[in-house]
Image (cartoon, rainbow, N blue to C red; front, top):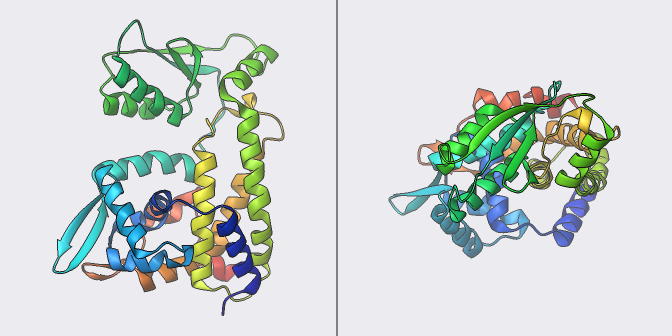
Length: 315
């Protein structure tokens, strides 16, 4: 039986912030379908997203666009179409969700990664592609032609340079902060280049939006699988949007009351409360060419530092 307070919260959020179909499908594929093999029958996907008010025509248009953008690939078996993540799509998800499910902040020793784009190299289109990828990874422009990030993952940076074909067109340097790691000039530079206030406001909006549903979930004895699926989808859709704008700076460079920590804790709690019933709903609705959706891969339970298969029941 569906909870009336949860139904009201879902309806109000969808009315106030209706998600775009393309972006919502990316959230569902990345958070839910990928751990279950990454392939589903289109007809079952259409049924899955009905609670969001997304009709069949819009789903078909969206998967077609995602296929053109190399996120998905289709396969026709009989009269049915099955959509799978491409290799490129999987790489994008792994790259993005590594930042979402794992808190990458580790003790900072003052090290920096610098990417210098000298003169006219790379060419303008390639330079812009690289710039966008680096911004996605949390880098910022600290001077003309210089992108920087404190404690950026070297492996991720190398992946970006290889993926954009710029590994031999830029200069990559490592630098180190001299003096105090949380000095006033350094924090002013960070605030100016990364606009932390704007990101903090986005985290606060996330907290205000999802804190009420956490209270209801805690006090609902029997959760409905479809409602849990919708809540988890909206949760990850919103958290993904904020998290991927967070440059993941070291704690020494962040305000003491950084809203990102509260937002992550809230997200983990709601995810835990909803995950078991959501998995039940997915395996009931979604289909593959071999039949029902397979069970989630082991790595699924490593998210957020380890989620329990029986989390909802334990709650």
